[in-house]
Amino acid sequence: MANFTTHIAIGTVVSGALATLTLAADVVAPQNLVAVTLAGALGSVLPDIDLKDSRPSRAMFAGLAIFASFAVLFNAATEFSIAELWLLWLGTLLLVRYGLHTIFHRLSVHRGIWHSILAAVFCSVATAIVFRHLLGRPDGVSWLAAAFMFAGYITHLTLDEIYSVDVMDTRIKSSFGTALKLFDRRHVYASLGMAAATVGAILLAPQTTTFVEGLSSHSMWSGLQQRLLPTDKWFGLVATPRFAFHKREANEGMTTGSIVNGGAGEKSLAAPAAGAPAAEAGQAGEPAAVTSSHSSERPAETPGTATGGAQSGSASP
Image 1 (cartoon, rainbow, N blue to C red):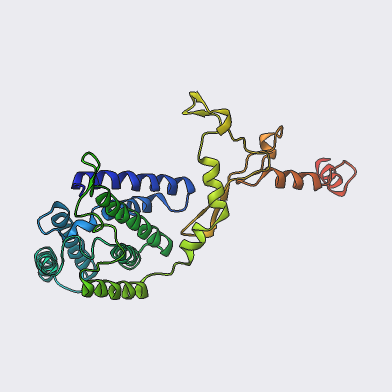
Image 2: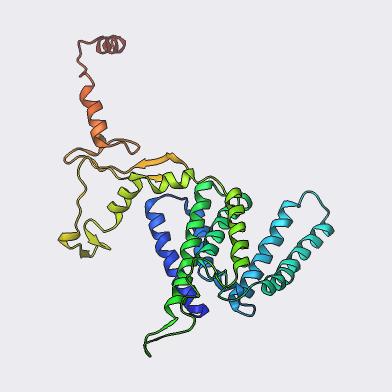
């Protein structure tokens, strides 16, 4: 199987690529994007949590203990004295780091149920629950973090499966087929338990409406297509090949939406019409075609109108 360094490196690359697309699509606020990307990086090492003495296992249980202890501390901050808060914080830290760690590894088997797509689904839904109910993130952001977690998790399983093939000796190792699987056939009860936990997590998960509508938005995909390649020069230095050159039409607008705010967060980045002055290009992001139609319908004022006469009368001594 791939080692820890390989998993975290490839997982970071995959999460970074997804974060770039997310940032370009403008579907989530930048302050939420960091946490979402970290969820993907975590997913890339999470399947090795069933290795008792592995770095991922120790690091993840230590991180989980820190997170749980501070969550308890902040939630109980106004209910107990300082001494009681210290005991709660330290007790939660030790319980999760050593107690939960010991119980977990007595029940788990390496390359068992945690190396399965079913476990990836469970961890993804659990991520959405944590982001929504513990971190207070919106529904769309919570499911985006779940998607990053799933991508990182599947990346880990795929890498382990690839490393099961010895390319140099042209042979398949005995571990082939144990990493990327739907569920663990060797341990049926563990698979049933994971399935039950997944169903329970789905019942507690936030709504998916905002996330699904955001991903199915035509404007978002149009915006990504517009921003996929530079329209003139790469970094302002190297000219874009003609076959990849895409010139935006005069009335073509690139609209991106927010996965958090839905339609309320949409903004138009339409270009002004060719030959039109900047003042007629529209204000506050309004397309040039709309603004110019307003200006063409406005009647021309002449000195003989009532407005002109009133202004002339008020100006006379």
